[in-house]
Image 1 (cartoon, one colour):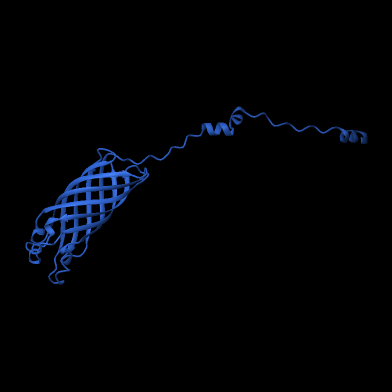
Image 2 (cartoon, rainbow, N blue to C red; image 1 turned 90 degrees about the horizontal axis):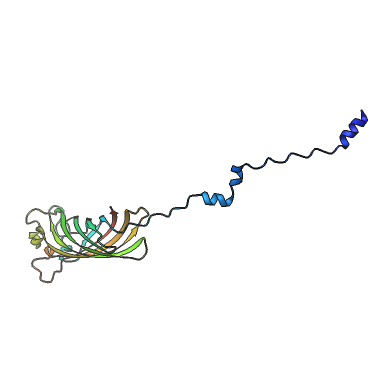
Length: 220
């Protein structure tokens, strides 16, 4: 019995079983095959630069002529609809609405609050600095009026402001195109010569208005 135990101890150990050969599925997963099978990364779409463009703006409208002695700075809303014929050229139609009052010229008991209405059209030229940043300049012509009770501005010397009269405007700004190819954010400043807002008794009055606004643009 002792000899049998000794023989068992002297016997060489059974070599461990080797791993089973890799299956075909396991063998196929290599760094090279994984990279080959991975879907390519799709870059974000570039901003859309041409199409039907709707732009809305919110900001302030101020007065640089004699009308500044009548009304304070107004809350200003502007909207324009255009079509980009070329990458750099867009004709458009525009509308604007501002709210102010006569509190600069009259006390609180006599002051009138009123909107200023305007509409017109023009053209915009755009220059792209990068794919997502662009500068623009535009010119427009249209008509504006203050929607007030009859002779509310006449007694202050601004009779023509109560009816639609022509304006000539210019605007410059910058646009930032978003990853969403339909959207762009912008900021612009503008000036206009609003003929109806000149003081009748003054031959030296230049009825200038200025505006500054943030804008949201959507390209269809």
